[in-house]
Length: 352
Image (tube, rainbow, N blue to C red; front, top):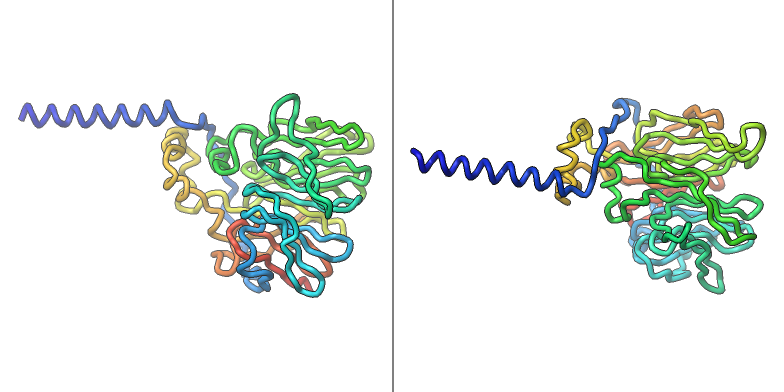
């Protein structure tokens, strides 16, 4: 009996020591996170998408269309590929990176690309140029999305200054603001901070009149409006909050509204995780548990939001049957083009 009790004491001590080690050496120092209330409003409209380039594209996170109607995307194998008007795909530029995210067309020709490893790039027929790689002496990591203003200024987000793209879910678990909104001035070749302390800064879009821009905070489930002109210049306010998913990329629509892709950040069965700091610290140590908590590949949602911040339309694939983890939605010629990190195609949805 004494031997039995001794074994239990040793086992209990081992378990306590293991838990303490996991907690104290956890890669995160978490806060609690309030998730948006569950919503029963959904549909299956995204299951109607046509699949463009199926099998050719590996996780096309973002899309852009130039003045000629040519569609561009970047994929996980480091390629920038484009779809011509005649329906043919071209492997246009090899960028040699697996962490290519947001892209936008440039008025001077070419495209601007967010490379999580290198910073902000400009890609033209002549090659690739690094525009911004450092801020105040530190490397810019995890550049996420970018938009160009009419004066050539580039506004771009840094999702997290603490965690790398491969560990992005740790930023969600930690629930502390490590994101930034930056501005690159091409006339001075300088990069400056516009907003700091953002909650996983993601999509960036300019209003139709360019009097304000909108930046998405993914795990805060909201988008902020930052005024660029007028009496409120330099001020920030909430554009829309309590979203039914984490806002990813945002794009201006022709009518002045915005298309926002929403990501389910936490699987339904693991939402309790965000009510306990200890549970978060334990999960953060085990990739398999992180995979269980991450709900991004479970569904797809896209919303259309008016300039006043009210939701106009919503499209879903509620169980990810056809498309999931939609990260961007871009309107062009009465169609919506959808990028996804878990698909091998770009979705095309008629808006008529």
